[in-house]
Length: 500
Ligand code: GDP
Ligand code: IMO
Ligand code: MG
Image 1 (tube, protein in one colour):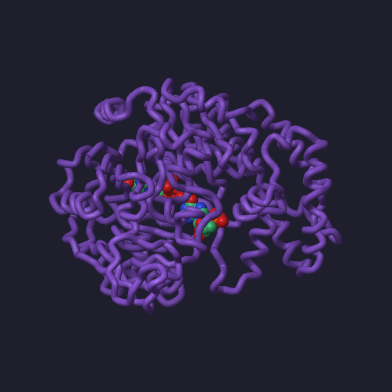
Image 2 (cartoon, rainbow, N blue to C red):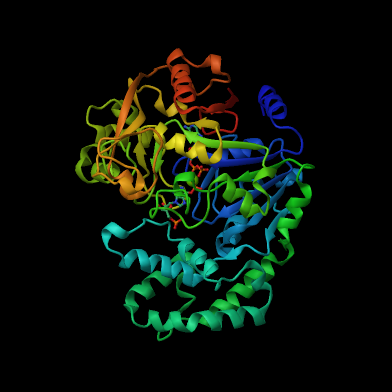
């Protein structure tokens, strides 16, 4: 690592810091990259919440690594860094097993992995119900989930019917819990289209039909056998992770790797188009079993523009609702273009948005879906930092290079009917987001337009290396959203980062 970057990390974070790396938008802002960078000075890296719905990308010496279930800190395992999966996580043992195998095949180790015995367990029927719910929902009610079973896992948890990681170590408990929970569900499954159930259960991530039963629909014994096998595989790393992490607070530097983003949080996000766990700093602390006050540094990752995957309103979406789908459907002549940078100033916003997405490589790291693209929304950012704190890392600034005029959303005009009960009147200007989806649908963004820059910034290693207009863009964000930019990222590689 560049010496100046390493020195800055050491200067900014003191030994014994507890650092939260979370997202202040709708996910996919580069948390994996920032976490990986911070691991240069941390001793423990923890994924405290979320599930394998997330996809975190690191690029290390040109090599791209994506993790879903295993913390990004695993890439530092050989240096003795401890990676923890906390109790707030919905743990999918198959994803974890496959990911570890992939890492081992490329020479990585997992000697220092710890999994909380309290983490929630993702079961095959959670994945089945997630996919059935999505398949059966009316189009306007589909969440666009990642199909990883997340909603049903957390539903079971709050319904006090969930399994946790330690249940994989005890055959009796596993049998007793499953035979308590599953009969009603099997009876319900038997009322549905068996072909649809069969199809879902034959997906690769449900082990190609291993859990399918032709009359019962679910083969409970097969689930038990497989999960006990998983238990054997993970037995040595299952532990009281919360106690371990708590005992290191103030003594070892701990980095918490957030998943998803503030606007996808179950309580604070754009409900109902959210995930089912908590993604804010409070959620990270809770998932790790820490007090929020234990967190000494909050790094909210913010993309220089915005993306969203799945359903739900994003007011600054370029080209309007689901423009990526419109582009894929209506602009077939552009789909063969290899250099989308030629289209990033296209007067048709549908094309412009799609081009920015292609230049930014905006494909979901988990589902491969095209991410929807939006201009940076300071109304949303003000809301998110109100929850998570004002320190932010700006990523993907390089992707904006070449755009002549860059709109930034500074306010929303509420265009719905008067709603005095919640303090909203037609025509009112909002400078802080109200995240409920039905309200967002009624908000029209108000933009200020900033001049762009043409210079390649991907080699910048300080604020002063940036062209004046890129500096102005950052200054504008700081002043107008009342945030403090700590880190700036100008490329996917660990090294393409510097302190502001
Ligand atoms: P996460 O879910 O927040 O960890 O983010 P993802 O990994 O899903 O998506 C971020 C994508 O942007 C990944 O492909 C990263 O390699 C890439 N990335 C991160 N920072 C930068 C940056 O500053 N510039 C560019 N061009 N790509 C970046
Ligand atoms: P990372 O950590 C972006 C979205 C899904 C869907 C909604 C609910 O990589 O930033 P779920 O499967 O959780 O029930 O889906 O949340 N979603 C994400 N979007 N990045 C993620 O993770 C996401 N994890 C879930 O697309 O809209
Ligand atoms: Mg991601």
